[in-house]
Length: 104
Image 1 (spheres, rainbow, N blue to C red):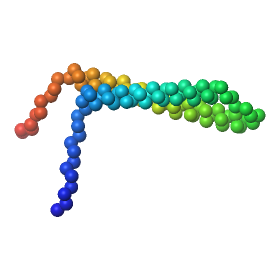
Image 2 (image 1 turned 90 degrees about the vertical axis):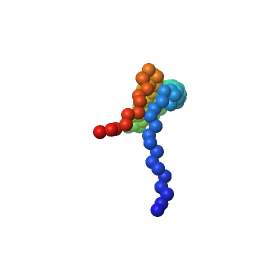
Image 3 (image 1 turned 30 degrees about the vertical axis):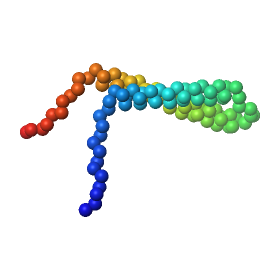
């Protein structure tokens, strides 16, 4: 009795969608790379100025964590760029498959 919407069939990836996704992922990777470089430069120019051994260790660990997380994001988006571009190229050269009806 209720008018529920029909579930949408999942769309197959097209080369255009793959290349648009690769461009977006590449832009994000580039932005994260620039951010990682800026953070690293900022940390390098501002040394830790304290006499406490514990504070030095904790601040060094936090700096390493911040740089590591930023670098990991850069790597993930960079790999996604290559993966999506590769999938787009693969879909360009793939022969179109015809719909097969199951007649058993």
